[in-house]
Image 1 (tube, helix red, strand yellow):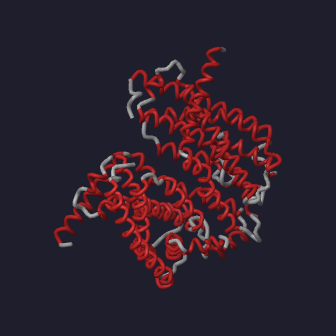
Image 2 (spheres, helix red, strand yellow):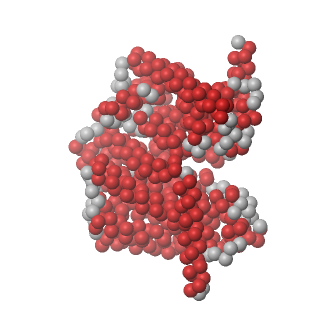
Image 3 (cartoon, one colour):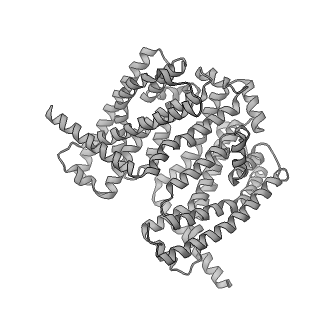
Length: 277
Length: 281
């Protein structure tokens, strides 16, 4: 129990360090929040307006069960920010430590290697929550999205999804340590993950085979549960099954990711290649 | 400027291009990105468009009325391919300068007798290969995936539009190069301008759906004309004659921006030399 508490303290210290570094570059911090706005949301909303009839997104009502494009897309940013937390917070942090030559000394401390990923992911999750809250508030105040009252469901959804995000963090950490320059793969995997989660469109428009892959992602279920609650959209699956799948897919991602991380760590120790970049 | 110096600059241009090409080849992961993104990015918007149309005739008719084409995939692929090409041209020169700054080689390069045009645009020329590649990938993806074929006549018209648009785009690229020399880190500025282009220039939508004030902003930016004209010649069968007005505006913008870029770059370089700031970053 004592050791667990020490690891938790170490993870929090790592997360605080990451957050401090992030806060030092304020323009970049602001950009991280507003980037989804101009890169995904505005083009998406305007594409929706191109298909609108009398200002109503009647097509979206057929495929997603709502005409509220703004609410639909702004909630989709939850998946985008959660995936970013798993993919980029760990990838950037490990790459920075590798380039700066500080990863090897950090790993010589008595802290477990897994704890570093936990800390980096925790920092990413904190930023994801802040960014999502700001974006949803922008959606409500500036774009008139009707979301507010029932968003409390976000709390249990986020808590469960966090384990899946940690799993992604482990997988990405292992990938970066093996490939060293994995930017494209991380970027591409992040993009595919977000797209297949249904962040920008309902997954029912995807080909059948690809839809099955979507069901294996925790963010698909996290998003759908949020949209069902906030926008009254019909659920992809019966709600108890969605909750169950959210738990199962998050746990599975964590188990698979941790196993990949431990194998990679073992390989690096045996080969002595940790300091290479 | 005599013939010998022109030949020497041409050789330096070629050398800079080869150097960048070599660096690019050293990271094969980056090569994959030039296949993945031209397909994946527009494809995501095609799925989004399917969701917004809902398979209804009236929504497709609305799209047709606002865009002038019923080729949804073509509309989106051409828009985003142009955006990716714009990104390369617009940020390429500034990014190349910034990279040299960080590596500590910019001062040494500025000590050579090569023209500043070589320093600015030599690396960006190598990226043009990828710009052509992006359009090829998009053309093949449209043909195989969506049955949209682009014939040689349309391709030639598109090339004409690109040639007219190049001075304006390279001038903006040079302006960014000047900003890099002056301020060093310009990531946030690049993202801001990129965001402006994405939000108003019509990569994924016709600018007619924008509010009036945003349409005015869009019409003051060269990429808006470039994207609209490329779509016109590639998707609606327009000849060059029908977009002459747009091309004249694009050429005019190019002339004004080129003069501004030359003045800005010369003044910034002079400032950096006098202040000894070339090596700072």
